[in-house]
Length: 415
Image (cartoon, rainbow, N blue to C red):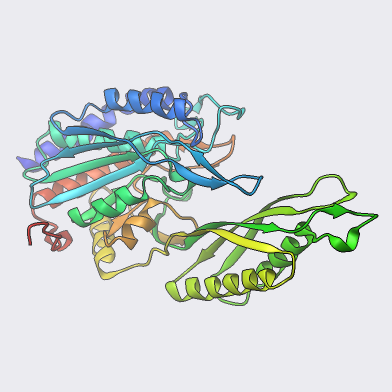
């Protein structure tokens, strides 16, 4: 009986492919850039109504504002949208977390705002792959799991967050608190454009360095000045020269602001950079070098240097627990004649944060596409159904007790 219901569920997904595309188009045509608070709230309202995960308990979570360093060297506050959480059978012995972000990199001033259907299997649009297509996969997979009675006693929680594209600074604590409550997690970032799922990821951190010097007339009193731009350029050059000194670490100097009229010695400069790392030893190596460079600037008379930022996404490694989940997904893929292949990447996502908090997860259960973060972003339409079928196969097997290796000893708040 269970196998018949599973086949019926898969057939239902196939029959509803065009409705999935229609829903994705409507969702992607709504701007939810990470800094567009009104847009985030509007899309959150749409998602709350559209997801309709009845009888799951719904919660709208107000998130704290994130703090950023402006081009004036001062701290600024940026509000964000709410996180959306649905919880079904929270007391179940088996529990799965399903999560993905609903923000995109496309702000209100970006030229890329609407979807275009190229052919029967290609939809181009803002966020169609990263990661609004993942929201479609998640919602349709859960819909058939519930409507075709494939969950047995298994419980699940859905979390949609509004700030992943800026590093999830406001929702990070939510992920950390939730991680202990589940057997495993599925995140719905797009898989790689050649179809592989991501096995492991580098860690990442964004940093801002603020150097303050002393203003002076460049002609009449040059020696009295302390050139903040020149000192910052020295520090950033030293950071750039760390590239190649330790395997797996890259430092990208991405932005520099400072100075004004060229007859004035500049007293303020801000530099921004990103670092990618493969392990905690590399994190310490990098942080020690950065601390040393900042201290060297501060030893120079007339200069002050401060650094803001952190390794917000630790490296995501393959663990015995995550390997069990990967093997289970491979087995489900074989059953569906969807061979699963794996590949590591330097990109990061909320899967890094969940892994750091102890939850084994696979974070590329979304559809296949390419051109992410560009006006060429597209999604393969047929992969929406294929990924939903994979999720249904995995969770239904887990709920039926045939994937007991994925169950783990979870934290008991009463102990």
